[in-house]
Length: 283
Image (tube, rainbow, N blue to C red; front, side):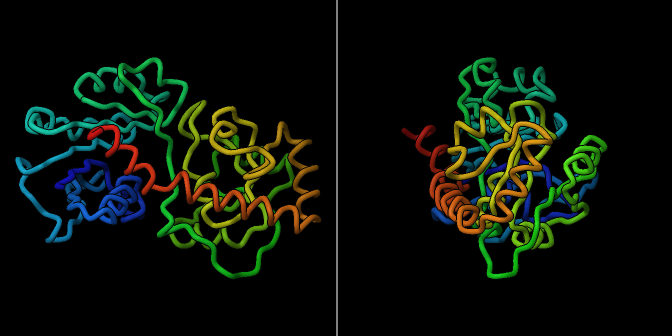
């Protein structure tokens, strides 16, 4: 099958974008997968292997991956790709709900990663982020301490200071994976994509078989079992106590990290997401 995936490339993270992760998953099923889009703030097209290239009229399935910030740069495909199933997969819905709702009318199948918006988008289904196990996987190395990894938003900086947890910033791609693998505890705080969205970080942490300590979130608790696959905290005081507890209880911490890893890779990989899209469209 010829699958076209339109998404925005990230110049400093080429091949790490959500669209790239889904491309690899479909290719593992044996499909030809061609990207459509440019790297952000450039006119440079996302790279495509020669054996994956095909003409737009040969497209058998089109998947629009949210271009971030309601970027409308790929609307030119709407009048061209009317002959094949059209799939929208949107993530930061809470940040541009009006744009997503309007755009969803153009697609045959709508998926949203924020469960709070499933009932607000016509014909929408819940499909959260996932882990690309070709990028995020366990590796033998010494693990130490607990930390938050992420962009130093002021709210995140303040929280890390109150919690007494290190904040590691400006680590991307392989450096980010190595940073996650180096921790005994990865603390998750502040979903930057809006309330209700489970961002990539929990999936990536479990994919590295690193213990995840995440702020209490109903959506996360519906995908994973709190206490079995990860552990939640309610506030700064609760976080401090749980960091101290799990740093001193290696066996219990490692058991939860192992079960979280096994469950995540089995149920929440991009292979699983690609399969969900295929079975929904071609059922």
